[in-house]
Length: 328
Image (cartoon, rainbow, N blue to C red; front, side):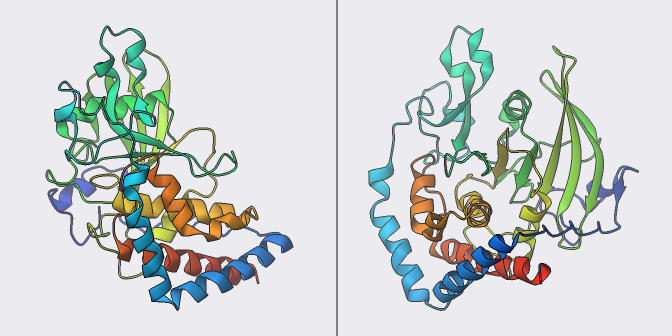
C-alpha cells in the first residue's frame, strides 16, 4: 500500500507492526549482461523505440487483436457451474477449462467443483528459463481460503498485486492490521513489510497449513497506483517489480493479480516475459501482438485496453535503456 493513500484500508494498517519500516529499501542490483546480451538489448531497443514512435502502428496491432478475440475463446464450463458462480468477482471474466488452476483438494473430494478457483495458468513460451505465472482475480472474502491454498499447494514464490485493497476490486486477503490470521486451515503471518523508493510495498509472508509441518515463504509485492483500465504516468514502478523478481527461481509460478486478473495483470506478464525472452535471444518476443494472443488463449481478455498495450511497448523500451545504461 502506498503511504500517501490506500483505498479501503486506514494508513495505520501498514504501520501496525514493529516489523514494518518506513525507510526505503536499497535498489536491487542491476544484472550483469554478457557482451552478447548487450548486443541483443541494443538491437531490441532500436525496434521497440521505433514502435513507440509510431502510435498508429501499435494501434493497428491492437485493433487486429480485438478483431480475433472471439477465435481465441475456449469453454469455461467449470467456472459457470452453479456451485462456483459466486466465486467469480466478474461474471464475464472466468478461466478456461483447459488452463484453469485446480486446487489439489479434488483428489479426496467427491465433487469436482470443490477444486475451483478463478485463476489461470499462464505460459508464454515452452522455454523453462522464462517465468511461469498464475493470473487470478483479486480475491473475494469468500475465496481467501482458496487463494492461500493455491499459493501453498503450488509453492508460488511471489504474489504481485497491481491494485488497491477495496471491497469492490480486491478484498483484504492479507492480515494487514493483526499481522497474523487464519484463513481456513492456512495460517498466514506477515514477518516483514517495507516500502521501496517507487512506493512498492514488499512484504515477507509465511504460510502454514494445519495439516502439514511445511512452512511456505512468499514475497508479496503491492503496487496500488496502477489505475483500473488505465496506465501509470511512467513505467518506473512496474519495471521495478520485475527488477525485484529477477532472481526468482523458475520452478514454480508467480501469482499476478489486479481486480479481474486480465488487464493490468496481462500487461505486467507481457512486459516481464518479453524482457526475459529478449535477454535469451528470442527474437519472436519482438511481436507483442503474438505474445498477447498467446496469453488470450489461456485467459480471456488479457491486456484489455489499447493504452495498456502501448504501455507495454514503452515499458520494454525503457527497461532496455536501463539495462544498457547499467552495463556501460
